[in-house]
Length: 493
Image (cartoon, rainbow, N blue to C red; front, side, top):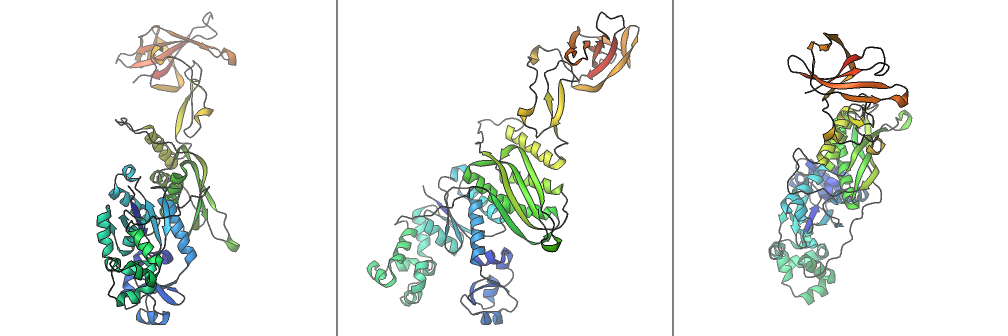
């Protein structure tokens, strides 16, 4: 089933980039010295579309005025379309600042039309915009309903009933003929449909009938789909000089929303991101501050990337206020589909563990989060070393191949340096005399490094039944005349 979501963005906010003006403060946009868009407050002052600048300023002297910039409108529409690619690969741009999404194949993935519309609204809000959403089974019908107001209809019959109540002015092909149509008493689309088609075509042209047929699903629709660029680099100018990292994180989310759409369209995941903070230019120019966000596992989820970037910004200091942000995706990999198991893993999946590690690294720093790197050596103090958790597993040494079930017990807590023990009545002593609770485990190694060790490890317990891991070291070998020395090396839980 084909189902379309139309996202209509008011022209005025594309210029002012402040959605609250649409309802709170009077604002007007001029094109060729005439009003082309205005806010509700300016309309309440008596301003109308098409009015000249002088008359509009006389009626609403406190209104914020803007000149229409079609290049800026096109750039913001492209950003919105790129961000919405994360919901469907079939996204197209329509006239009157509207983005169309064919979501018929995406409903099950995102949990239905209501959940999908909520996610689209969240994405639009993260871009700093507001929009009117409508749903219909045809793209043209959804486009007309979105320009009229919020309407959601999922069936052709209900869509036709709603379309018949729309004003004829919403058909762009009917705008040049509105005076003649209103003279006939034809103000709604249902009344226009009842007029004789041959006469209507002779008077208004074929384009009017074709657009009306496409809206009602009686004619095929052709679209030019939005294509994601081959590489991702997004830039945005900040409204003012900003030196607070919390505010920068909020603006960076606009760039991350575009990145999420680009990654979904290209079926890619990002392994490393670069955020460039541009500073003052000119004579007092400051080089851009570069923040590198490295991930242990490639990701594409917008919320996860924003959490990591926010932590990175919180730990960073700015040499000067930022005036622009640039986001670049450096290392990319193919997107791996998430595993959908019938019964979820207790404690979270592997992806959840990786996200937690990446969040800790972003918050504490790469040197503060480490992982164990076992080595092929029988000496306990050499059998493991600690390295950064972001280090590639391929660079780590291979662990000693052994069956853990056949090894003697090992303590959970291994001392950094073995602690010497004294003998009392020929028994090792640590707070209390220690009783040997296991047969000896001989470890003889290190001869290839010129530092041979010969040790007999035991599990011992004290008078309070606390278990320790101790060893007897033979100085110079077992056949030496020197007495062996006893050491404490670990504690059992």
